[in-house]
Length: 411
Image (cartoon, rainbow, N blue to C red):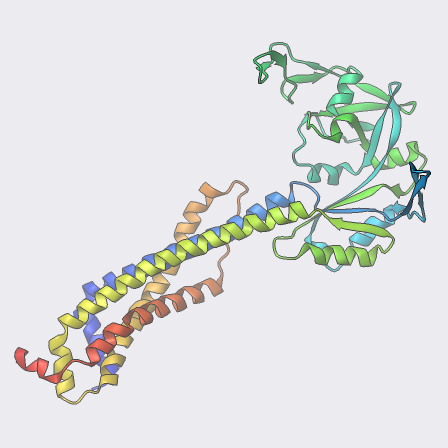
């Protein structure tokens, strides 16, 4: 009689307990698969959202400066050997090996001009990339469409009387004093055009108050500002948002430096670290919870197998009495456990995928998708079989050591 035949016959006789063990392992594996699948999808979504929060790489012109000191008195420094960024550098960044990992490349030219007679900063930008980079901007009005459209920062818009707060919009400060609050819904644009450097431009929209330098700036089309400032083809800075969920930002910085040796390329480390820490914490949490659930499943297998050894004392004793060796008994029990564990692993993988797909809409907002990964299926079955085998080693050894004489009391 073959040992595998004995193992299969034993499973058929004890279908209830086999299903119980299979369910226990399946629940543990299903929980782990669901958590790992969810964490993978959430990790992708978190990374994508963080990548939309702004630039994490800044490219600026390279220059050497010399600090002047005379008689203990500091004099303004002198910059020399300064290299100017140009439109061609944007194309250079688009040629790097990791170009597909770049989310946004936003070139800028910054200078000063007069807005209705007021001296202020002006930034020439490519609005299609700038608005994708500055997702936190809230606009009253609409994005610029024509070359002569401009966006005004909140402070400069108020200074040139281009906006007006909607009456009745009141809030309280920390001291309880009511004041008008200007938000996209609570201000309206009262001025249609503004003069920039003697040229008339249309006010397309106003950026809600950010508390940053944008409040005091005017944003116009890059080509218009280059012509206005007489700096055709020149740039002041290039901001880059890199998709760094699965690649070190240092590699992208190194590639940009190689392509633009005349520029300073630096990574905003706080942004990169925030992304990495958020992803790592999420992954660690999923792994810990999965390990706890699998440990509970292993304890269930151990307890059930110990009970099965006591219950099958007569059967094991008879097999030992008719000449079965200890290794035969161990192999018979292990075959049962492997079959149950493999079935539980497959069932748990399917249940985990289903649970993850059903739960995904409650944890994400951007319509993230859950990928069907074959490697996760192999991992689930392997972990299920490993958990079952490890949990059954001691019960199987104990069963193999039963004295054949134990069978006599049942004959």
